[in-house]
Image (cartoon, rainbow, N blue to C red; front, side, top):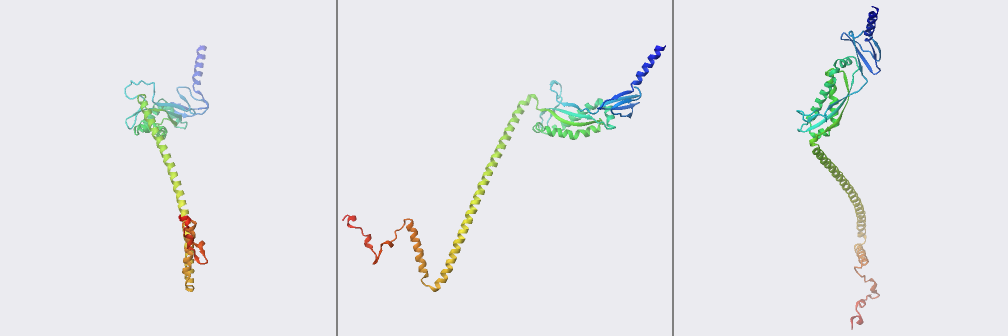
Length: 314
């Protein structure tokens, strides 16, 4: 009889201990009593009613989880329909996409119990919503824009996914979305790579042509600037010289006007002066031989120009 009593006491003690739980440093707990949330204890020892009355769910809230969404190379290509993660672009091409979605549990009151209640469907809902957003973005763009738009795609999903998750009360917080794999299917990858290489070569040559055009434009501008400066300098020099000569001529004209009134032979003197200057310039260029050296006391000795008999052969 005593043995049965001891066993009953031990069983009762063990049952009572089911209401005791240790909450870890990175955890929070949700205590439900007959289905109603009565407490959300943090790290430490929790003592409540035993199992059947209280239900204690401990949740690691400091852990960041990862979910892979999309293409799985191991999936059989013989399966009906498109393989998982193979999406159709706006120009009717196919691309394989694999995303990494990182999320954490929302430890705020209310959100924590949402996670506890919906934990069995959290990743399925997250997978579905992420894949739906990716399909929307890819289906509205050409294959070239898709293959070159990894960053834009992740930003598109990251800005729209939280609102969709909140509507489902999943109790999670989105941390980050990244593209792990984005490429054309294996069957056409070589062709896509050849096209991409050709487009890269086109862009390279276009950049080189633009750089060469810019270089030649700069050289032309430099040459134009130099010519403009030279022309401006020549113009200034010519204008200065012309003004100087005009000033000298005007001064001489005024002088001639004054002297003409008092000296009737003034113009003849000017003429002789100018003729003298002209003859001197012609002589300096060996264009004329002046006769001044042949003038004697009786005037110009013309016999000096008569050839001698010896020179003439007589």
